[in-house]
Each structure stands twice: as structure tokens, then as C-alpha cells.
Amino acid sequence: MDVRSEPCTACPYRRDAPSGLWAAEEYAKLRGYDAPTAQQPLAPFACHATPDHYCHGWAVCHSTRGHDCELLALRLAGVATIPSAAVPLFASGAEAADHGVRDLDAPAPATIDTAARLQRKYPRLRED
Image (cartoon, rainbow, N blue to C red; front, side, top):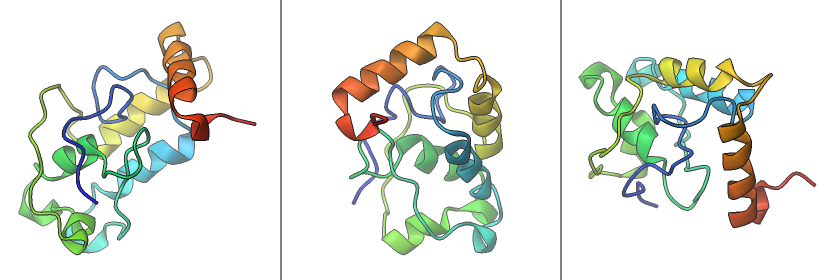
């Protein structure tokens, strides 16, 4: 598996992604990758839209925080190349998670529209 070439429009690490799109437990996962390398989760973070790739926002955000916080999951997966980001991303998993959970109880119309678009495009995201 490789890192997506760019963050999807619904990437929780994008500063312009709508708040409240993903479940609270998905946002909670982002915080663990802020820890020093040896304390991070071992599981890589897959893209929500295309889970056959690692999340681009996750890889870029957590690969630019200095040597002490390099992504252990990417090391274990043998990923050596991470494409640069062409859109603004949050500086940490905590920032991304804080933004993401902010509107969980009252999602904006843009969040609802994005969720509907993703569910049409990716049937596995539909709630049955």
C-alpha cells in the first residue's frame, strides 16, 4: 500500500474539510500519532475515501513534526516517499481532531452535503 498522491476533499487533516464529517472515534485516532515515535499506534491510518491507500494528510502532517515524532506506522510499512501537500493541513492530529469534533452535534450544510456525496460514491460508507 502507498500514500495517496493528495489528500481527499474529506480528509480530516485538511484545514478546509468540513467539521463533524467523521465519527468521534475516527477523530480520536488522530491524536495518538502526535506522540513521540515509540509511543504511537502501530497501525497506519488509511484514507477514509480510498482505504487501499494510506491517508495523505496523516502522512504529511505527522512526517513534518521532527525526528522525535516520525510515523512509526510508515516505517513499519516500508513507505519511503510521501508526496508533498498542495493544500493547507493542520499541524497536528490534535488540531485536526479538535476541528473535526467541533460540529459533530450540529453539522453544517457543507458537512451534510459532503457526507451524502461520499455515500453516493462509496457505498461502503452508507449507514444501513
